[in-house]
Amino acid sequence: MGRTYVNAERTVTTKAGRVRGIASPRSESGGVTVYRGVPYAAAPFGEHRFAAPAPAAAWDGVRDCTSFGPPPPQGAQLIGAAPWNPQTSLDCLSLNVWTAARQGDRAPVLVWIHGGAYIVGAASEATYDGTRLAESGLVVVGVNYRLGFEGFGHVPGRPDNRGLLDQAAALRWVQENIAAFGGDPDNVTIAGESAGAGAVVCLMASPHARGLFRRAIAHSVPGDMLTEDTARSVSERIAKAAGVPLEADSLAALPPERLLEAVDTVLDQPSPKEGVRTKAFTCFAPVVGGVDLPVAPLEAITRGAASDIDLLTGHNAHEYRLFTELGQSVEIDDESALAVTASRLGLGEDAVSAYRTVHPGATLRELYAAIQGDALFSEYTVRFAEAHAAAGGRAHFFRLAAESPALEGRLGACHAFDLPFAFGNLDTDFGVFLLDGEAGEAHRALSRRMVAAWRDFAATGDPGWPAVTSKATAVKVWNTEDTVQPEDASPVRELWAGVAIEPK
Image (cartoon, rainbow, N blue to C red; front, side, top):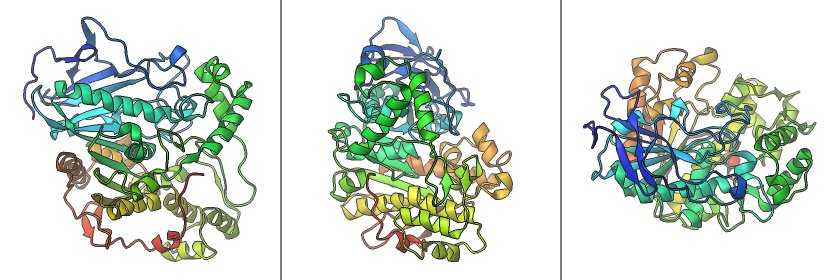
């Protein structure tokens, strides 16, 4: 696909007007063009505050799309937060396109939805640069969407899940415009990791997104969803902290930074005295029960609501170590405190001893990380794949076992370790940190294989290993030497078998 672009000016005509891109700085041949900061919806403030996304205004002439659009309002609580301050432009609903295709081509399209606990992140992060994927033959789109209270807070009389509505609006933009960039609107794959993967499974279940994509990639899917009652309760606490009633006009009168401060106040409230003591890093998740997400994704998929959508999903072997090893305060008095926390998660009395058998010599903190990783990401992800397959859908499952050498190996195969590999961006700051320096040939080869799997899945629905069936969960184990296990051999799956994963 590395051909000279359709015109020397790298201009494309979209429905709203012409846009000019630039050669991607990461493209050695110059064959990949990136269009940055293309608006897909109006700024979600002023009259559009807490509303469903409105169309972006058209423009005359050629719009210079050589700089990333501003990130949505967010604090700096988590790894991956984008730099934002009260002077940042609020025109944050934009997307980026990387393409080596030409108008008239019909390349598979991959739409990336970033993670960040539904409170931080931006499509402009270097880890998410789409150049390598575009060189592999995809047209890559990275989407900014509303985060935190702006995107997921309950506001009376306004739609919940505004962040998901933003993503659906971006997918409609793709349907209307991506052919001009050489992409095939009939072959769109949505992809995300962490909260982005949570958004992906919600879009699979949402009536608002039906027909807007054909395939889905979901890495490390979080099982946390909220009921409407819980979302209302969270918003009541935030409104109280902000000093206003829980009412749309009063909340809309507040600048975004005031709501960010109120959310911080709520998150700073102490955890229960019994069990593991730790600080929550988000109070937001998709809200189940409204017109945009009437039932929880796992339930919808079990009913066959998305059986026509191909799914590629998986998780990392040591998900939660990213948090316990990089800044989350965790206090565990003794094994009984860990048992209390395990019980709250729905596990039985023998859960801690069972985990200790699987992880001999592990500290209490390491056992907590193992249990939390399974509770939040691993069990939901594999259960989602199995439910999709049982309902007649096509699902492929993986587990990343390659381990980070950073911090003397304490991170292991942690949450987000897969990202630099799947994007082919091992040389970015995040990749260099996780690899504790420059990547060796074994890691570069693993990255090439993961990029190829994404490309092949987006193109054909087959990433290169057997699909999950109603009888067996085949697992692709990504490592410096890959394997394919005919069945999921995880020794703790049976502990979770009776635990319902439902909106809280």
